[in-house]
Image (tube, rainbow, N blue to C red; front, side, top):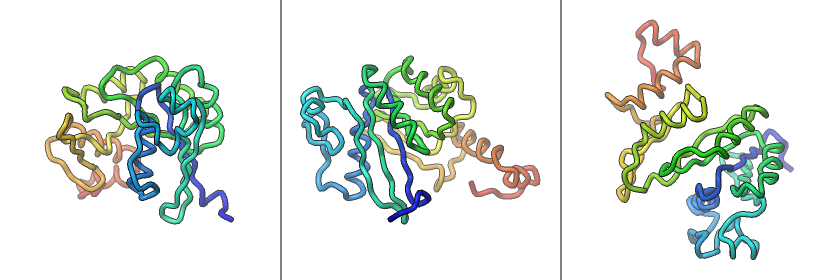
Length: 212
């Protein structure tokens, strides 16, 4: 039996239609947990399996997808986004140590997302934001980051993976393994990392090379 230090519980939350179930499905498929990539529209995802969910094409309850990764057991808890099922989100928040908040890149931040952030801050749950649907056309990611900081009142959002291109030719840049020159978001990434670590800050002030 695994002890609690070997188990990581992560809630996947977000407003309705932000792509939470599809996000979990993509992770499962990428890790080889499934042999095919299911879709909500086809009613064959691993986390929306109840007849009501398949018929309504939406989550109505919690579902857990578990897998082993780096000698840890990861439990992804897919939650409903429709306001009528907010109690399910509260239930998930009480048992997790981390959270992934999904936001649609093709729409403005709604009141429910703001409520989710306040809930996570209240219970001191660390979370990352995944801006989804960046394969849509005419999306300005830098503007989206600015909008999130202003709307959610979070002034230190640290971009880690950003779109190199959006739309049908969607590609990403991972700042953790790629240094990008003359890029405002990379500068923001570097500045936030350095300012959060005293050792890195000291190296920066002494003009030493830093590999963030």
